[in-house]
Length: 317
Image (cartoon, one colour):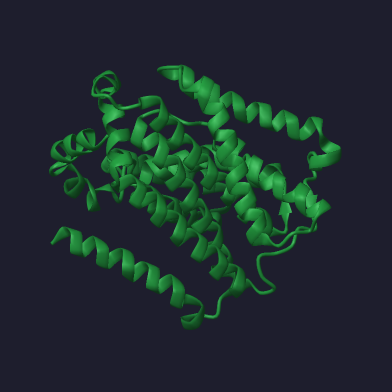
C-alpha cells in the first residue's frame, strides 16, 4: 500500500511538472523550477555515492567544474550543440571521478572528506590561475542556450532530471546498490564474501561524478554562462539538500534538492532576515525530521527483506 502511494506521488509530481507550462504562464516560476530540478539531480548524484557507501563527498563542485568549464572551452573552439556537450561532460567528469577515486578511496574516516574538499580548493585555484582560458572571476559568456525559449529550456532540464534521477534510483535498487549498502554496513565482511569492494566503490564515485559533471554542463547552457558563482556555490548546498531530503534512497535526496531550492527562493522575500530564516528552517527540519523529510516514503519498503536481498546479491557476485 505504501509503495503504491509513493509511486502515485512521484508520478503525479512528474506529471504536474510536465503540465505546468500549460497550466500556468509564469516564466519566472519556470526559471526557478529549472534551477531547482538541476539541484535535485546534484543531490541525487551525491546521495548515490555518499548515501550508499557512507563516504562523505565534499567535492561535488569539482566534478561540476569539470563539466561546466569543459562545455565553455569546447563551445569556444568547436561551438557544438548542448546535447553532445552534456554527454561529453558526463563522460569526462566520470573519468575524472574514477581517477580521483583510485587514491582517495583508500582513505578512511574524515580523511576522505578532507581529500574531496581539497579537490574543490584546487579546482577554484585552477580556475583563477588559468583565467585566460576559464575567464577567472568573470567566467565565460556566450554559451549557447538549451533552447531559444524559457519553456523549451525548462522541458530540456525536466527531461534531463527525470532520466538522471530514474537511472540513479534504479541503480540504487539493483544489486549494485545493495552491495554499496553492504559496504557501508561492514566493508570487511563484504570483502570477505568475495565481492570486489574497490570496483564497486570506484563505479559509485564515477557515476556520481558523471551526473554532477553533466549537471554542471546543463547549468552552463541554461545560463549561457559558466563561472565560479554557478559552480562553487553549490558544494555545501547539495549536501544540505540531500541530508534534509533523506539519504540512501536517491529520490528523497532529489526531493530535498527540489524543496530546499524552492524554499530558498521563497525566503528571499524576507530581505535582510533571509539567512536567519533559512537557518531556522534547516534547524527545525533536522530536529524534527532527523532521517530526512522524504525518507519515510522508502525506508520501510527498502528495509524489509534487505538482508535476504543482500544475500542473493552476494550469491550472484
